[in-house]
Image 1 (cartoon, rainbow, N blue to C red):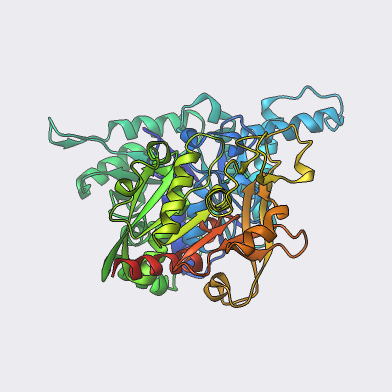
Image 2 (cartoon, rainbow, N blue to C red):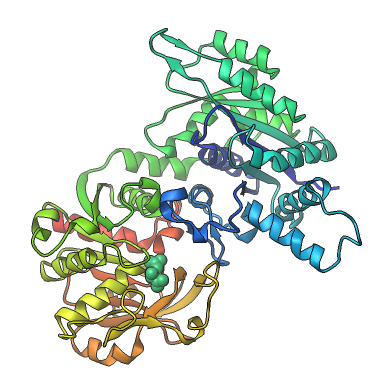
Length: 536
Ligand code: GLN
C-alpha cells in the first residue's frame, strides 16, 4: 500500500482556464507547509511528445534536465516549486500507445486481445503512480489535459475513476476546475455550465471533491452555496479563482480561499504548520514595486503567440524582480525587420534578446538585429538559434565571409560556421533526436559569463541539432568573438561573447528553462542589469 497521496485536476466548461497554474499554486502551498510535492501532466493528444509540434499549436516546448520535450505547464511547475521535473512528469496518449504496442509486439500480453480497458488504462495508472512509488514525494498532483467530455480524454478519466476506487477517498481526490461566466446583459454570474460539467464527470463515475471556479467577478456566499448543493460538494470545497494581475498571485489567492486546508483535510494530512511563503512574498513585493523600467526587444518569429516564448517571458519577470526593475518586453517580428528599418524598429530599446527557433523564415532579420546590437553597444542575449545568428553575423560582417550561414538554412553555404555534428548526419527521425537535456559546460575564467555564474562548471539544458563549427573558431576568436564556454567532453562551443561590448552574450543552451522564482537565472539577471545601465 502506498503512502503517497494523489490529487487529480480535471477541467470543464472551457479550455485555457489555467489548470496548470492552479495545480502549481496548490503544490506551492503544500510544499510551503513542508510536504514533498510534484506535478504531472497527462496530455490526450497522439503526438509522442510536443517536440514535433509547431509552437503555434501548443506554445513553447519545455525541456527537462533528463532531456524530455514536454508541455509548457511543466515550466510553471518548476518555476513555482523550484524542483526539477523529468520524463515521468509528462505523459501523452502517443507515449501510452507506443508502450502498449511495444509490449504487445514482445508478446507480453500472452495471447490476450489488447484493449483500451484494461490495457491502456493500466498503462495510464502505472504512469501516474511511477512518481508516487519513487518514494520521493508525499503528494503527486496529476493534471489531466483537455476538458471533460472530450472523446480523447476518456481513458484518462476512467483511469482516475479506477485509481480513486483502488486508493480510497483518503488517498486520492479530484479537483475540478470550471468557469463561471458573467452575462453582462443579465448582470449575472451563471452556475449552470459548471453544474453540467460536474454531471459529465459523474457520468464517468467521478464525483468532484473540490470545485475551483474561474471567474471575473467575486462569487458571493449564496452563489457558492448553490454550487455546493447542485454540484454535490462541501461548501468549503467551493473555491473561487478570480482573474489575477499576475500568475504569481494565485498561490496567495488559493491560500485565502483555503484550497490547501480543504485538500489536506480530505486527504487526512496534517495542516497544523502554516505555509512559509516568506521568500515567495519577498519576490512578489519586489516584482510589484519596481524602482525603474527597461524595455527589451524580443526578436522572434512566433511573436503573435505569447505562449511560444513562455519561459523567456517568465525569466524576465524573475530577473526584473531581482533587479527591482520592471521589464517591458516588446515583441518584434524578425520577418518585419531589415537593414532599412532596423534603427527605427529597435528605437527606445535597452537590450535585445534574439530568440530560439527553427528554419529559415525570419533569420535575416535576426542577423540584422544582432549587427545593430553589436555596432551600437546595445545589450544582447542570443539563445540557441539567437547565438547561432550572432556567429553568422560576426562571420559575415567582421570576418568578411559574406555567405557564411548555418547548414540548416543553406546546405550549400561555402562557409558553414554553424554545422551538423557527425552523429546527427544520419538521423532521419525528427522526434526526440536533437541534442536534448542537461549538458556540462566549462567557463573561461575572466570572462563575462564566469563573472555572471560565479563558478567554473555549469549545467544547462539544450534543444538543438546544429552546432558552432570549431573549424572557424581560431579565425573568429582572432577577430574578437571570444569563446567563453565549452563542453569539456566534446569540445562543442556553448558560449560566445564580445569582451569589448557592455553585454554581448550568445548561448547554445536555453537558460530560460532553469529560471525559477526562488532562483532567477543569473544570465537573465545580469542581462536585465545591463539593460538597466543602458537606460541610464
Ligand atoms: N534550429 C537550431 C538548431 O537546431 C536552433 C534550435 C533552437 O533555437 N532551439 O540547432
